[in-house]
Length: 157
Image (cartoon, rainbow, N blue to C red; front, side, top):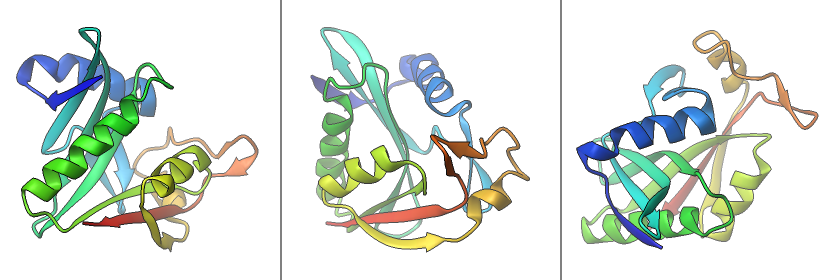
């Protein structure tokens, strides 16, 4: 598995991977619609094929927000490799904190990030309920769990 900074030729893959994973490249988060392609991205490749993408944005301080992480071949280590790459790049650029938002029913994401050192910082109650005004396609539930809240996780570097 190799990870590299995304280039212009990766744009169609990034758009498709995000649309497949999240239904669109636009995400409703922080009470706004955000382009999940972000300010920057990295792509994971396995045997010469793109198998994952991580996108992020600079928030004006020494912190980066992870906007999306999508593996087109789950279980291959692409997500871990992308997160390791981003952590190393952030440290190299003297970023002090990585953070992200997931939703209350996304137990796989919560487990994935906590196993990699992220801490739950806060719960934004009913943020997803409000977000449906911006993006009505957000499901009401997943696996019987109502989708209502945003969970903010962070990793101090």
